[in-house]
Length: 342
Image 1 (tube, rainbow, N blue to C red):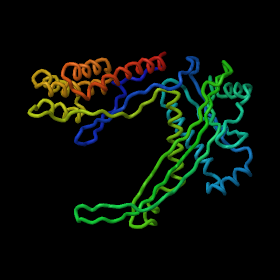
Image 2 (tube, rainbow, N blue to C red; image 1 turned 90 degrees about the vertical axis):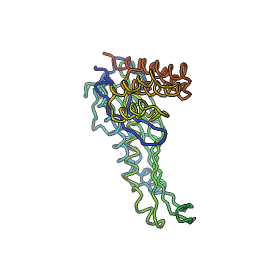
Image 3 (cartoon, one colour; image 1 turned 180 degrees about the horizontal axis):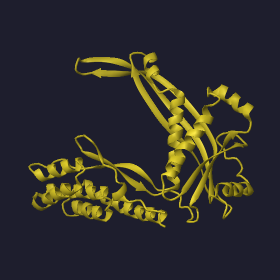
Image 4 (cartoon, helix red, strand yellow; image 1 turned 30 degrees about the vertical axis):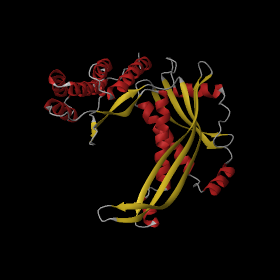
């Protein structure tokens, strides 16, 4: 198995142009669950089909869910999980067409599958472990109303109409380890996504809101991805504050522009000049920006050194907590390396 490479896989940073200055980029976060080294291949199965179909239909009528809503949500959740695991170098992952009925009611774990069934599935797909979606329940709530709108330009206080949709998906996953006949992970969680639109009337606002089925699909896919990130190191977006300027110093401004252009070598040159020639506040800001640059490049030790310099030597207040954060990230990177090692 190959390790992630910060340099080889680094995506271009993107920027949010605000007065404070924030830069957004990706890093690899460790898995929450530390699985045994011998689990190198996983098959994914669906065990979320209700055993009592008649009761499920009645529940759908009472809750307003379409008869196929949870079935579609399950497939989207498994799509999201598969996308994350197949994108990892830690596992070989197989998305199977296995579909099993689950006893019990939604929101509760059924009894675990018999180990003979698990061993047969592992032999069938030539894998070390099985991940099963053991249950899923989805819901969509639509609310609407009015709110005050202050049109300062025309000195008018009026009202606007809005519609808000909340998609909620509850999922239950198990990861079966047949070698130890152990449940390596058992996790039940709820995942929410919200959408909101405005309109000239309630009807107009509702008409432009994402429809129920699409909302549940998106929330389910996102929930499946979230569970995948529990099992394997994965890329996440993070953002950091940086300084665009310092009074009377051209090097800080140049360094910030080079950061915004993803020209890290020139950014480092300009920021080092600011540290060398600027006044104390400029030095602190430049050192902080250097810490951000080195974090983006994956050199966390160098980033920590510059954050410590920015706070300890030049009293840049924002760099104090950043230094603590980088210490935590250095420890997390050791976990990532361990999880992705040969």
